[in-house]
Length: 68
Image (cartoon, rainbow, N blue to C red; front, side, top):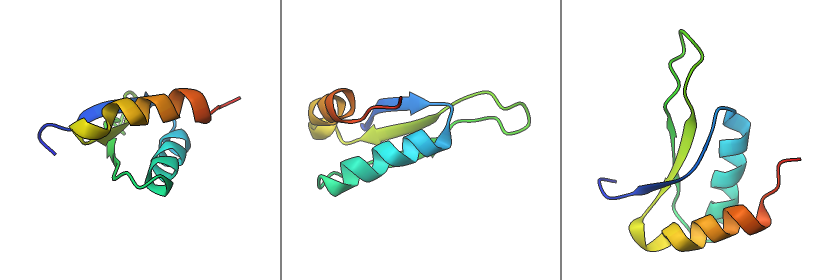
């Protein structure tokens, strides 16, 4: 996971889980990383993908996933 890149971050875990599931359904292997400091509630949940999947993942997130 050394060269993997972050394609999504949010402070709400459920949103990160939705993004992860959508990308998995499209044959990607996303990883969710909890970067929250639990004692203070600051930070985000981030989704990382392999370098060759970054452009595709960002496009999917922007065009197909809406949080409204």
